[in-house]
Length: 231
Image (cartoon, rainbow, N blue to C red):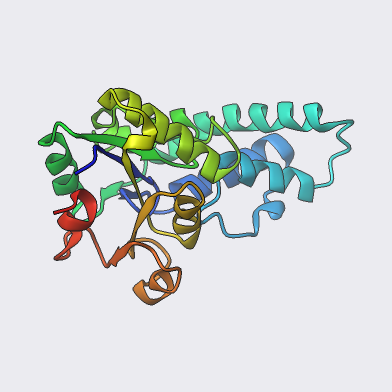
């Protein structure tokens, strides 16, 4: 069996934040930009940078050029982190069923790298997962800091995972675990396997329609171990 790099999404996959992430973005926009009206779209499967960029463009700020827009995206995200820490401190974050066992099984295998593949910027992922004490279990990751584009950030995570295993990424099996059709599509875009879990806002039928490598209600379901690690 090839060395395996596992890339777990955060929101809706590893944990539920009970809306803390969305509330934090909305509060950040209200406090920094005076309104949250431009955030009326679904955040599912989007990167943090894409969420903020799309909202700023919808507000029709008179940015002189792309560099000016990029600077405001970064400034808004920095501001958001402080709001997120406050939201998470007052929210009960919950680890989804089967995830703790999956992490334990990954730790038991020397040929498996346990990482994140998330649209959250790195510090945002740390705040959310740190609330339930699991952030440090992930030795590497691809994050929203790496790219606004989900396949690109997943590829960054895959390469870091391969480096941690001491082998070229081309020699690894990469598995993306996520809860949205966008996770499945991004996995396909980089030639990775995908495991879809119906622990977020998409049900099992919706996820199976995207043709992932495997789909489960939760990672506690029969067959999940084989899907993650092979036979």
